[in-house]
Length: 220
Image (cartoon, rainbow, N blue to C red; front, side):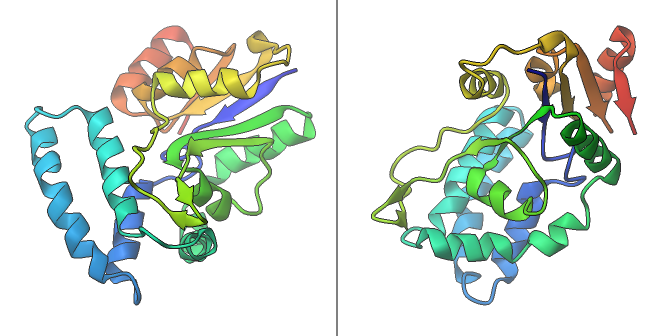
């Protein structure tokens, strides 16, 4: 079985998810009052991150944990509605070249995975209309069908993406040499190195340099 693994931020979605999520919370007619609490909580780790005292991976995980706390007690259905509200805006910034490649893989009967650090439930809502065999993201905890933030999120990022991909494909014989992976960031390297056909999508400079050095496809 051949697979095609797609990153989300910077790959399918040309922008940054978390920037849009913050804007959505700040301007939301119902939940905007939670934005100030989130902002106050995020400033200290943000400053520490900027002066290199707090690693990027920890910053991303902390940001997602704090953001979710604004929705403590909401039902899964209410969260679906919240994420659904930004689907149309977000889909306007989907990379059409990447989507064409995704559709090509579908026609070729390639097993397609979306792998991202974003909330899984969010990914399911905003990619509606696209077909993935599996979506791997950061799961939101629910207790009695309500958002529960006392458990620490398991943020899917870096090496953990590779681990999650292997878990998702357990039991299948994968033709890695003839498989594909798409990413924009150097942090996507572990996933890109899994396959025989890695594609750097509008890559950051460090990944672009490596892709050129190794003769990988670069999609601008």
